[in-house]
Image (cartoon, rainbow, N blue to C red; front, side, top):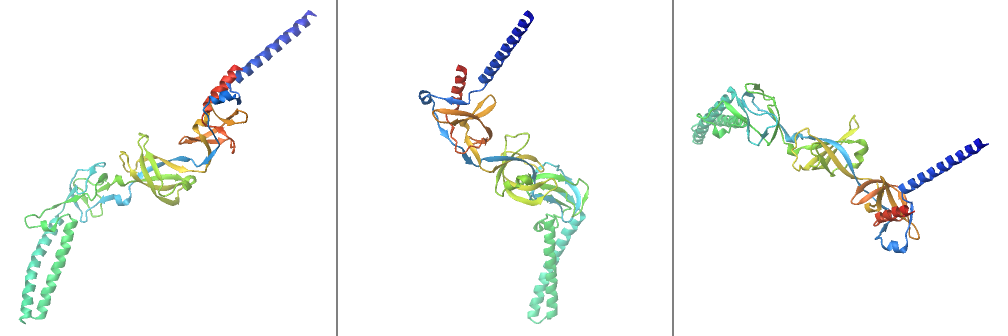
Length: 379
């Protein structure tokens, strides 16, 4: 009998301990979270500086992150050739060198340059003789001392030499030799090849002693200051991209230094990887040294569908979660969990709940949270 009494007593004791433990756990959980409803007296309410607001439905700007590579346009890429070819006598360039317009890039040497100057000087001398002969025949013809046929031959001879002299002048200019500088004492066997634009040497395709034909590009110069950003935009984001949109871009090595650019054209072709080429003109490099085929990260600000927002001060943070105070009747406020999105200009997106028409505390929300926690501690 005593054994049964002891067993019943032990069971009762264990049950009592279990209930007490459950009550303690419940109290701990209650103390860890604030009570969802806060009731204030009129006196307490006067001590809190408070404003209220309802959801505002606005379109928040969203940053779309893309990848881009600098691409120099064809009109700002120059392949240096020579219309007559020749042997490379001197070249001191390497890729990456900066050159200025009018700078000597390559010195070429070839016997044909000598021949061209010889032909020009010979033609020039013959033209002077032909001019004199034409004048003489014209005077004789006017006095009927010479036939019309002889005069016409003198005129044709002069005209032929004038055409040849003019053609040789243009050929000399293609060699970068000024015709007026050619004389018996200035005939030279070398010519200089000059930079037509200022820029950076992108490639060098020849060396000293090599023969280059008129079709061979010796040097390629690019003007990186006129480079475009070739942006890869996925098809799903294409509807958010428009000509004239401004964007920012930066390198991985210095994300805080950002250049600005403006979209100038959008390709109509979707590539195999699902992207579309979008081109943007750099408007302000902001100190970034632009080179060809340079990879950049792009931030494009777009405006998407309107969403519900509250002021930042209306959202309070407690134990890793976000809350807002809904205004009830009779000095009562309900703490409700909210899911927030992006923030812009002190406005925060509220993804849930979607309670249009409800009124929320904006200014004074943190004071209410403090009062709620103090109320829970006093219970």
